[in-house]
Image (tube, rainbow, N blue to C red; front, top):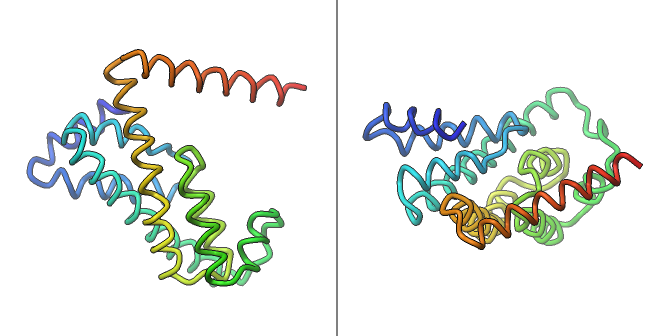
Length: 180
């Protein structure tokens, strides 16, 4: 997937920045496409620092667009109680300050699906400004961790091997627990 994204960036020429933002927004709206491939492509095409900044801006623009679209869809359906998930319930019953902290905490972890946070926030009573600010603050450590991890795996240093081994171990443990 990374190679396809790189070819899109190359074909975009001076508009590659906007192409990346568009892909981030689409990935965020569909909520099931991991953004780690886009972060890797951004870092490979734009360099580490600029790629991280573009990934951060793309993640934020995608999250805000998704939030607004999901909120519009939920309001048009009139189904706020569609999901009975305890985290969505918790988020929907929080004050503005509590919602801010909860969204920041969920965003801080790089491998918590952004789509899940966007959907949960859209189902809640969280305002757009609170969501946008909390998402922006929470995405900073998340994108730094994701970017560093991707860089180490791409460089294939001992840290990259350790990171890949750790995630492989976590997937194995998750699979074994699910199987039981």
